[in-house]
Length: 222
Image (cartoon, rainbow, N blue to C red):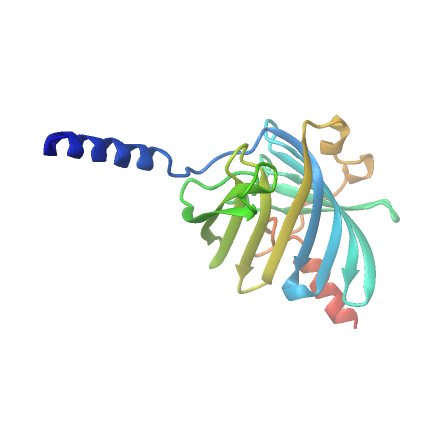
């Protein structure tokens, strides 16, 4: 093979390598699964369920966990298109309506995110022993940073890690995802939320800071 042929082969290999670089992706539009959360630098720990509807830009998270030494149950309905979210307390049939910052939606890799690396979770030695994932990082509002992990195949979210000076570290892990939603009512506020007025805040919450108010309230009560 002459020099021209070698160079041509190298060019083809380089082009193929560039074409295989991971690109920011968007998760399937309808998903349901499990979620665990550690927020406020470890003060809040919880586990529960999560549902997501990309068509309507809505998310429902139901959590049960600990804030300090106290247990809690928290039901949150996030309406990204309306830039609001609801904190629902079924024990008191009460509802709080708060502003939601929609700059970062956790079910997609932001277009400005940077690739940190690609690795196998588990092992690549044999089929079924691991899963190929991409790790991305970028900026959040209010001088925050985030790192997210999505599967290479299917763009399934796995973990979200965020830091903001106001709320500290938040880690969200998701698992047992299935495609589709079974209950459309998940994305409709309960009837007792109809009279809820939007609470005035200096800065809207993101998904990562939505638990901060609960954590700070518990600190003041201790």
